[in-house]
Length: 337
Ligand code: AHR
Image (cartoon, rainbow, N blue to C red; front, side, top):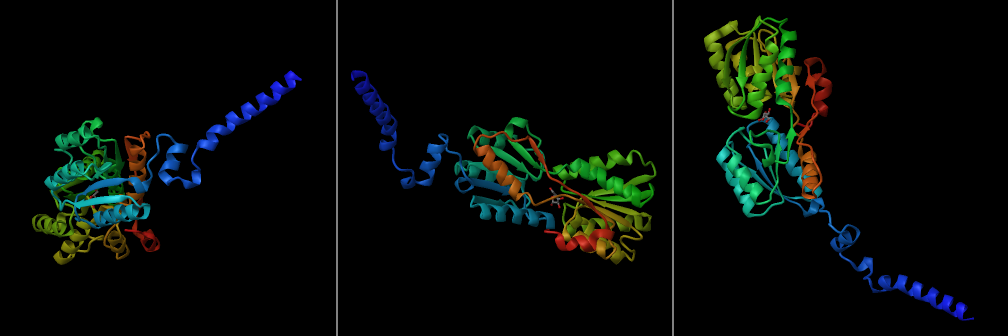
């Protein structure tokens, strides 16, 4: 009898102790989303809508850059990220100033496409000291690895190598090439210059007879090509342009000089922007090597991981292809930039 009473007492005591905390806990459906988040996950992971991102863009020098800016802005908008975007108008000092502003504003992450490779150590260190991670987008910076969390972008060396491989095929291993170089000191110009020459070592009859910067713009590409044509005239058999915009400028210069671009002078460039596809359809450009500007989705995905303390790769390469005139008409309608 006593045992039976004890068993009944113990049953109710255990039952009450299990119910107790639940009875005292507030009901989940009366919690705010963030309270509910922190109950299910004590560290409370941030969501896209919680992020404040500072972004220091280079400027608007090319069709590529315009597409890159749209990708960043549209993705931020779609995800509900608060984006503070600065167009540095092709000036490194404006990008540095933007980073300092973002530090004062205590943004969560700073994204930057560094216009040139060098000169970033001090300001990146300031961001690090303030506890704000930097993600390099599109272009690398020549800084110690601990000053940025990740680089998201292309393999510019391989783009240069691919341009040389394609050019070698086009000219059967023999050419007088003029080169339109990108912005001096920028990662893509440095690497596309080096990668191209690496492959040319195997083709002794392919000679670079002139090389000059067209600053990645159509207007400068045209001017520099006019200068090349004035000096070398029809000795020129090929143009290697570090981007499509400069190639399009060169095409105009060649036509005004009275030669046929794509026929008398072969042209290979980099980016695979819509303008390049149109030029290939018109028979004026012989190939374009893709450099993908649509980096918005990958950038914000990386940023969210970094803010939540998740591991990210030091380099996230973008997937890219090579395009030729024969496929240009069918591919053009699918191009987003
Ligand atoms: O950094 C990428 C390069 O910058 C693109 O090839 C060029 O068009 C742009 O301006």
